[in-house]
Length: 252
Image (tube, rainbow, N blue to C red):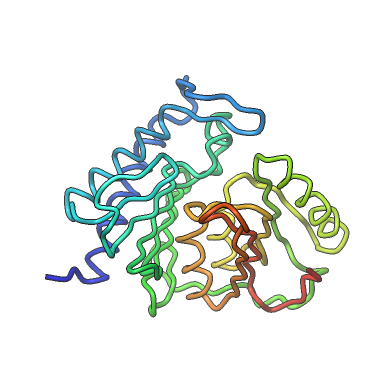
């Protein structure tokens, strides 16, 4: 029997809430570092969070594939593929900055079917099924209706590579000078969720991975926004992204 989108959404919500509980219970505590890089950090909790999510999802549907920041699992030939970021904003989490989230999306035959983003510190849960309204804690949401860049608040993300930093800095400078405020907040998935509910007007990044934005892309589109993704010429599932309300000229 083909599972219903509603049952799959509930499963994703259950997994996100469980992982969020794990993160919340470890927030502000000493953490084991798996890798400490120039502009990034990996902690053992990344792997534990993804394992928890995978076990919940694959226990229900062992024939599905999993594609996440911490690796792949399951039947990679499946028409269904879960896309997981177990802690989006790991550096924030490590430094006890409460701006991070769990992101889970599902695509079927390459098309996004549903998305869930959970902020365990604020207990905010964004959900969407393709073709249905986007919601925050069960309430329908819409993107911002602001139309002037001078009144906009937006965020520019920076990947860890020198190439991405070099591309992102001119955009950041331009937006700092043009928008009401420009932020670099450290969690792409949560930033995009903020675009979907009108807190931010746009999220811009020159190099971002699919697992960071998959759930958020569906949220923003369902909430009336605009998503422009340009695939990286050599790296699969990496994009430059302009994700916005679509109601203003960003000058990009």
